[in-house]
Image: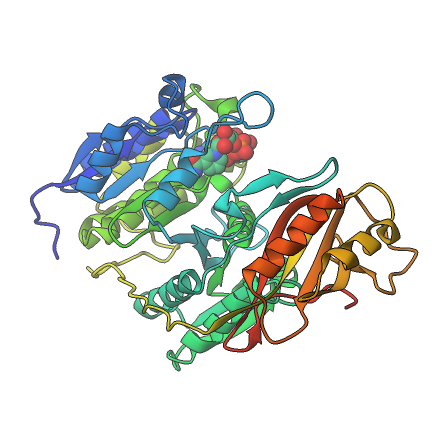
Length: 485
Ligand code: NAD
């Protein structure tokens, strides 16, 4: 692919808050660089919510997204949920999930002496899983005291993102991929991510690999970022990690982000709408501009990507800095959004002399195929029945044991995951939410036995919230033990 293409149509959303200002600056630079693009505007966010569209996206926008396959997006405000507007969904999350944008790629780089940073040589890429985890948005209030959010992790989702991270490393000349999880605690969900990392990593012998628990990993990233190259992690950890990393480079206003799917890709800044400075003409357009550089590369427009990125590096090197990174004695000029864009345009064709210049080559986008899973033998062996009860576990147990009936047996009761029966500790703090584990007495349970338990609990006036069936997969338990079990 070369830059002599007919113009490529891309969808453009100017966003909310500082969005219109930084998007105007970015598009002006792309046009001045001669990037062969045609912009198809779409409306997302506040204006669409105002029309009563709860997810902030009109039907016409989906059509443009499907046609172009590429979206350059400025930040969007998400109306806060809670009591006032519980129905509103984040457009950002809806876009990522509806369009299958499974990989969030966030390169985070510091700029030496030019943008003061505690880690002036930082250069890492955070590859964040983008569709799963606690972001599934499945939340419930279950009792007076307890609220839950489901963390959903799929094997295919792990395979897709981990393979993407390794492919990214290979193509971008990166030598190490570090996986970060909390699998010492979440052995099934995070454990799966770690296992898949080990399995897929074995196919990339030339890449160094390691795994770190996310808490120490995040601390090390902040203090010793040169230990890292590419980091692959789950959705929530990646979200937090990439913001910390971006801030360490000098400002969250500098960091770009690519959201990659099989058929559509979306490019945006890491930061939000910065409502405090909206309309003042002082926002830093760099995060969005560098996202546009990622987009040019995705489209195979390597020359334009190189030209824009080097002109931007030269501008930073010349000390022309927007307010968020302006420092007396380091910067030479405090530039508003438009002046900064003009400075970048004036440097198109130039390369930085101290900061390392970039030189992109055209590359096909990374395509990840994930194989269908082999079916397992799945056997029902019991159920965790969650009940609401204000009081002591001993008041519940007789009714639970009786309800177990002939086929099932009450094996434990936990409260917030800690075993409180049998042999609980008096010190354990409890709440009004009890998980009662019924297991089969024989080899397998049938659903009628579990339904029988639920009916007997109902007759005994035990307040059931939900039940979660217990399965073995090819003989292996698909559920965790209670703490202390
Ligand atoms: P924010 O990123 O908007 O602001 C954090 C801080 O960084 C503020 O001090 C802000 O002024 C500053 N800042 C951010 N970008 C800047 C830039 N380009 N130039 C100069 N300074 C900049 O985060 P927030 O305040 O938590 O969120 C504000 C809104 O943005 C919320 O509605 C949130 O939902 C939304 N948001 C959207 C996205 C997105 O569209 N992808 C991402 C994050 C937050």
